[in-house]
Length: 192
Ligand code: GRF
Image 1 (cartoon, protein in one colour):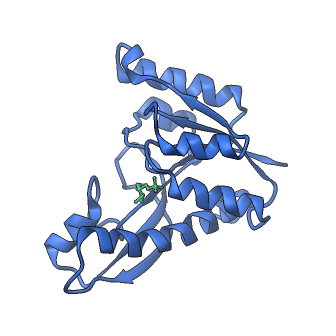
Image 2 (tube, protein in one colour):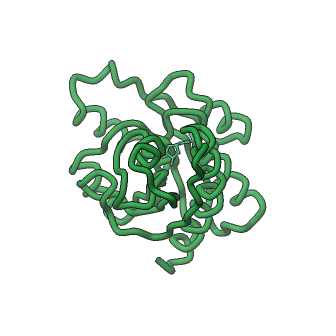
Image 3 (cartoon, protein in one colour):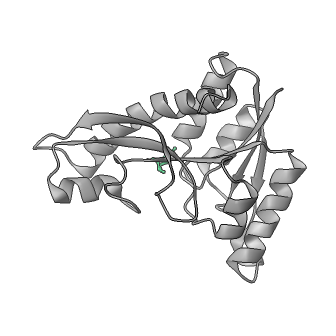
């Protein structure tokens, strides 16, 4: 069976790129990236998708009366692409229970900290502020509680005295680009 993947992204899409590259080079096999969906019209992630002939879809949140209506549209679109697996890659919206239940055990997310530490926004800054000496990234299942689903893979990086949010972000990002494709491969092969 070929797994149909859809990626939800709001920004630059470097994690999306790492998934595209690893599908292209055959590391993740028996999978297609069917669509990239964004809530941001000019998200660079959409440009990346188009470059590879992947359907790029913008769903405008301002056209929906509330979050639930937006998510219904999201599900409708994802179903049009026969989506088996939803990957969140810098998608800046919290998904509510209806959506999460619909794709139970079929939504993965990457977060730039060693969960359960530093959930939520600007995890790298939270890590620096706390003064931890090691941080990293986590791929996990998405459940109804934010950044709290079962952990699939983690990788750590050192935190240095002179780190800025940006230097730490870049160090973590390199590891993100390794473990997200790895986790997707495991999921696709039914090994999670
Ligand atoms: C990454 O740091 C990821 O961990 C977080 O959002 C960021 C997305 O970056 N969830 P990119 O758009 O994949 O470059």
